[in-house]
Length: 413
Image (cartoon, rainbow, N blue to C red; front, side, top):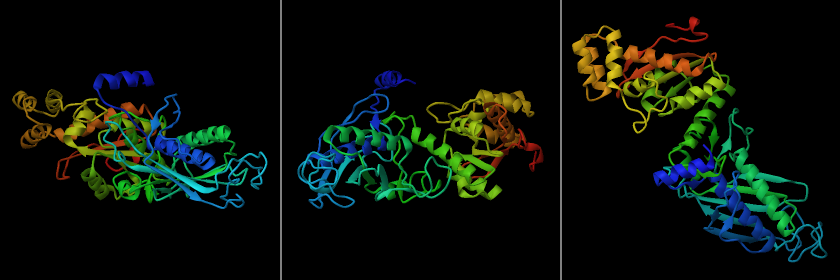
């Protein structure tokens, strides 16, 4: 959707958009570098996002730390007045200094009306001058994670500051340098207050980002309930599994289904994709980045939606179709009377129990149909698929045989 389309949609729904951690880090970096060169923090600080929006951010933190007045050494400046590149403090050189060794600015993330775990987090950027020619160097401060597994868009050992936010910060550093006589050679340390604690409720530990949060954002804008961070985590989970040499991954709707899959297949943690309601996100990404085998495991009611052709399994966006279940049960031998009871059932689980009592394998039928819908989305990608339906206790109530390319040699095919 275009930015105009998103704006119209949000206006229609009354939901307020917010700003990504990457946008907040860019704003904080812009303010800190400006203060380092001029001695004054712009407040509010305005940045330009990739699609041209120019939001302004109020500063929650601003601090200038004293450094060597001569500006010599790694983190020095060129003195109190404009000086030559050597930093002697006289003449008209490339760096206008303030005598500060570093500057820190902080912005509180506003995620708008999105239920984002990082809403309200304080994102800080500390900028320190480097010798000419050093470029822009990124560091992970407290609360920002470090990459420890291959497969992510960053090298192992790098701070978890994603490529688009890095580019956005580089661009704003260059603009500030051009405006105020700097070289643009800086070290940027991004930190997030309580980021390590917040990260425990994200995918980061599972995909090998340890010690804190990731600094994210491709547009800089958080669209409420787009769940873009969750979907991005699914994609990164597939990437990490593939880079780790895994050939079997599992898309799971929650912790109970993860436990079931682990018990059945003894998969390592990095093979478990917390897909939640986003079956479509898993299937579409695996279509482009195949693995040999994909197991989908979840509650019977949710997977009955996939069986009926829904790729978003959230209750607000798809419903259990008892008429569909009744028709499916007929293919498994259900009488017309039983089919009528199924169609009138209060819940999908109630329909399942009716079939269990009558000896009709509705769970297996749903699993097989959900597998076939998944294969249709995969469009011939070299991925074998099987589906497991469970009840709330984690008991398997339906299971399909694996099917698709390469399934012939798998147990149960």
